[in-house]
Amino acid sequence: MMSPLSIAQLVIYATLTPPTLYTTYRHALPGLLGWGYLLAFLSLRIIGAGLILSNPASTSASTISNIGLSPLLLATNGILHEAWHYRTKNSNKKLEWLAVLSYHLLVVTALALVASGASALSTSTSTPPPASKLTLLKTGVVILLLAWLVLVLAALYSLLIPRSSPSSFPSLGGTRLLHAVLASLPLSGIRLAYSAASIFSGNKHLSPSTGDLGYRVCLGFLPELSVVVIFMVVGLMTRGVRREGNGEVERVSAVEVEVGDGRK
Image 1 (cartoon, rainbow, N blue to C red):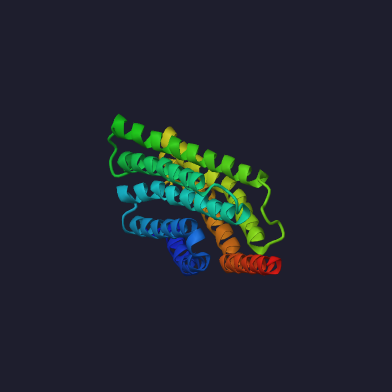
Image 2: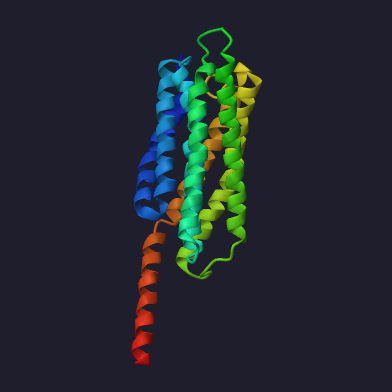
């Protein structure tokens, strides 16, 4: 039987891929991490939907359903990093990148654990899954929840830091990106809590790939889609932030040169 939800995911996420590519291009290097990982998330959801349509009991589909949360968290972290880039020009770049890399290491560790234990979610057999697989899976999900909490704290901290140039377009664009991150975090938290409930309870009805349709739509699909839509809308609204930022740097440099010539 064809899954209406999987068909909807396939169509919607495939439709959102071209504008995400455009947004990635416009935000360029400062936004590459965020928008690149958002593309990775869309790709995994498209692949996962295709696998479920071909084989609803597929272990691979369950694996992709769970590891798909990792690029969504990394996309959120990347967009938060881009917001920080435009809001705080005088930050310590080395410390900033150390924090970004540390966060990536945390999420990649969770990803590896979830991928290793995801075979425990197979619905094709009634045999109880190995305890070791379940332990890996649960540990990975706990780390993902910890990674989400780190994002919440980082976003709130960023909100408290004064902007370097409050009236400039890049700073305003960075603030919009930050607000998008803050708006997305409760939604991604719901999605993560849903996965955690499914894995820790062992209830097949809560399975993100083959469980009851109501749970999958309200606690899985809609929160994820809402996060993507929030990022896409704000990403398109701030598509000129890098160009304006470069222009501002050039204007400041020109003013400094004129002041220097005047003093001579």
